[in-house]
Image 1 (cartoon, rainbow, N blue to C red):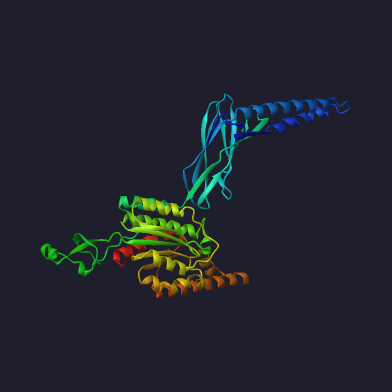
Image 2: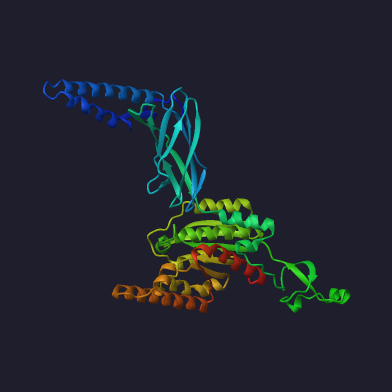
Length: 450
């Protein structure tokens, strides 16, 4: 938001403050006061000295306020949660006065700037651009406030703090760096560099695409015997993976997903993984939909394809927050049964913290499996895993270790029950969740399990 010199009075306020040299210069009057203690002339001279000094300081401060530089904040229209975003501040000194400028920005509540203040020497008629970084802790819409400039002139006796109206909305989106990295790696033909496995499709479905020489691991049913006899070496038929299948992403936005793992919440990690899965599935020609649920279904994006569908999913997720409620898997299953009539790969991002939270999913898995292929994606609990392996030094440490071990044991029981119910599982550390989810999707596509 730009501020020009002729900005209205309400947009720019100023107050006078002491300069960095005022106090040292004021103390210079003490020798005058001590020079003639008997007659009081020294004290009078010291008072007169300080009055003149304060007058000079006030004049300097008023001049600085009048000649305050124009200031403008610049930032991307879309900020990203959990990573460093650069905010730029541009200054323009339209006068012949040299001044030192210190800038402080009013950030949204809970945000921190690094550094929290920016300083620069601004020569006459000069333009400068400063920058700081913020790491937004949450997604959604936020507001920056005023820009505060502390101005000091050459004498540094008086200073002025000018507050400039610079209210500006900021939209914080999920981290979409995963899709960008995938796209770049795909163009370079180096998906392995970002963690994706190369999985060959098995036969028995899809459209015939090409012939190639047999390699270890190819199914014998995919051998092209006519070409093998002609070339005198084994030749395999390669099939194109089926397209236009449905991938339905179900995102748990209940209270358990509000827990922080690192700089962001479990929900943010799940959203990042869901966005990468959406991107890859859409590139593969599949239709992707979204369900956000808690104790009821909050949002639904009808399955679709193409770049526009990714934008719909991103817009639906950018302001999604975990709510202080337990999830109701029964309602999710009922919703999916009604709204997703065609067979779909149902990828559910949830937290398997305890049996009370996760067992209802296992109980309703049979209904899902009648029509869909359910996959549950969850995160390792690094805190519990660390505590379970931590050395015990006292009774408190022993209690924490035992509690963590019980929690991990309960999670294993839940996972075993889900697998027995026919729900496939993807479990990975938070930072590896997105790649692990996409690898499972690619594996399912390659096996033509859908």
